[in-house]
Amino acid sequence: MEPSGEKPGEAGGLRVTPQLLKSRTGEFSLESILLLKLRGLGLADLGCLGECLGLEWLDLSGNALTHLGPLASLRQLAVLNVSNNRLTGLEPLAACENLQSLNASGNLLATPGQLQCLAGLPCLEYLRLRDPLTRLSNPLCASPSYWAAVRELLPGLKVIDGERVMGRGSEFYQLCRDLDSSLRPSSSPGPRATEAQPWVEPGYWESWPSRSGSILEEACRQFQDTLQECRDLDRQASDSLAQAEQALGSVGPTSSFVF
Image (cartoon, rainbow, N blue to C red; front, side, top):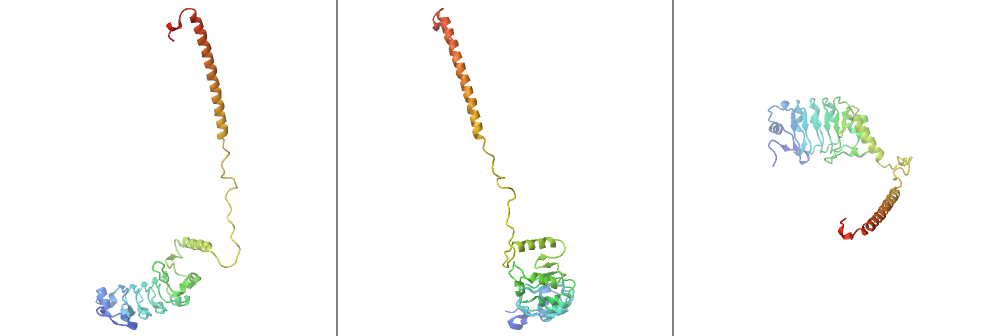
């Protein structure tokens, strides 16, 4: 069943009508609409959307759009999401002089030249043509020179596909990209990378010769000396006892003495 106020559009899709816009926003006048979300409705024709002259934020993602003609009259539009549609061009957006952020990932843009219409937008700073999280892209993103071509064509951009290219943090992003490029294996012939060398000389981390043998020998020597002293003392004690027994033998039986 079709939503109230919607009429069939091109290719079996739906068309934007005043009734649709008023029912979704609660606004009586189309010119009073500032924010509009028409996501995933199967829209194929933008119809009267160009009459929303005060529109500043617009989400048209997940539809079946093939052209953006009515958007040319939206001079106040600042944020636009047209991802996951069937767009082959963005020419009408050249008139959206206040456009700051554009998400056009998941469309059919095939060459950087199709972005030329955006070059005259003085406020455009954020552009997304590829979104790895949602797996949305454009054919032009498959080119190895895609990122550099977009930067050259639109030098005023601060963020491309979520990566900052100007302003605070841009040096860090560039450093990460340089590191990725240097680590990525290259198919072109060229000088081989210098083989990694150890930081220290061979044998630096080897342990010193064990001294446990000499320590054990010294302990054994000291033990033998102590044992010999004990033997000498035992012998002296035995001699003393023998002399005492001999001296006491002449006086009386030894059993009367308790030692």
